[in-house]
Amino acid sequence: MTQFSSNDTVSYAIEGGIAWVKFNRPDKRNCMSPTLNRDMLEVLDLLEFRDDVGVLVLAGEGTAWSAGMDLKEYFRETEAKGLGATRAAQRESYGWWRRLRWYQKPTIAMVNGWCFGGGYGPLFACDLAFAADEAQFGLSEINWGILPGGGATKVAVELLPFRKAMYHAMMGENVDGKTAAEWGLVNESLPLAELKARVAEVANILLKKNPVALKATKDAVRRVSVMSYDDAEDYLIRAQEAANSYDNDGRKEGIRQFIDEKSYKPGLGAYDKDKAGS
Image 1 (cartoon, one colour):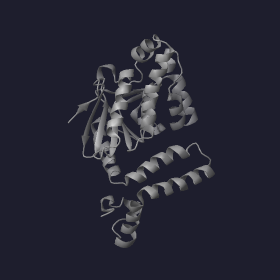
Image 2: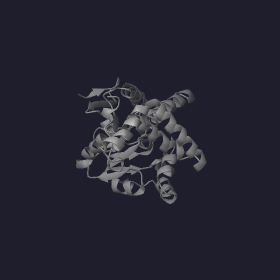
Image 3: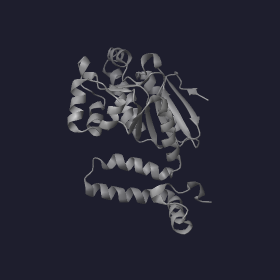
Image 4: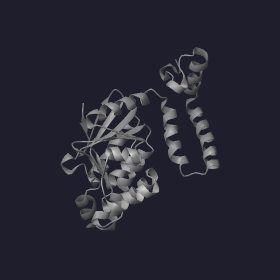
């Protein structure tokens, strides 16, 4: 059953351990307004520690994923209220993106259509990203006289080779889903009609993994990208020890099934996490 946030700007449905969350402003191409940003934080809070949610998928209602920030509501109307209102709106938007980057559960961006500017914030915040071939990606800020702010430039530099990031940010041209996959903005691109099935397939694979190990892995990949090798090595040792202290039974069960039962091969799939503690 589909449910809605307080102001109906976000919808969500839980099916078989997957939370399908959608931007719900199709008439505005799912542009992010202050209201939507508050609603998204509300929904993330509701879902993060639910036992019936193992993976969160973020999609868009209608023909867009998100066309970025609402120029009227987020920029013009907020700026008219002064610096305090502007800072509050920034905290709300950047706040839920940050929350999503470090979310407890694995997250997947399912980019079904337009993804512009500010949409790069939640795109990068999701752990994995899949796009429709028909989707359109763009940093259009340069076309209306500003730089790609709010983290968008950082996302481009983080995900793209230097020359492609520079071209993408300076030219303001759109690229389709196939090009986005070739450049590294998303993991894969495929026809829109096949997109949800592929995302569901990936989500169901993730559901079979140890959730403690998944969370530790998510965090490790993001953390070590800005560390020296020695710092990363030390961090990863400590992170593994912390994960073991929290879920040592799960780790031992995986080793037991491999060595004693010989019931799975780590290089070919996950152990049966439902046996842990039984």
